[in-house]
Length: 139
Image (cartoon, rainbow, N blue to C red):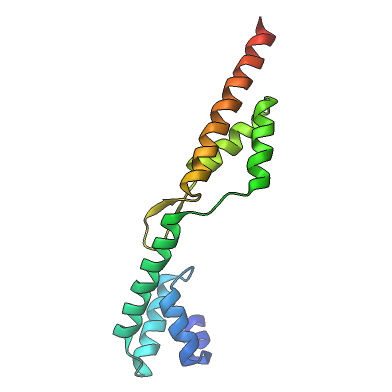
């Protein structure tokens, strides 16, 4: 008996079902053993698999919407962009182009469309002002 089997044997049916449905951050070997244990306990894998797929669809639809950026940090980014702070360039890029992967492997933007729009504007303003400041020091 390996270390995973001992851990799995101690879990309740509900805990094993949750692990199987969430399937996030677990090693492949562990997940195979969970599936075997669920089968041994006569818990229907098909219904859990359908529930997991439905959860993934829900998670994907939430990720597709993106999250709203912090108004404080967006305002701070614009202030930094106006004063030529290179931090604003990085913040603008982060707001505009950051992505994350879902459990199903699809990539989604982290922030919603309005936050990404502000990020692109912040990036543009910050880059122009930084470029002008750099140019004025050279000349």
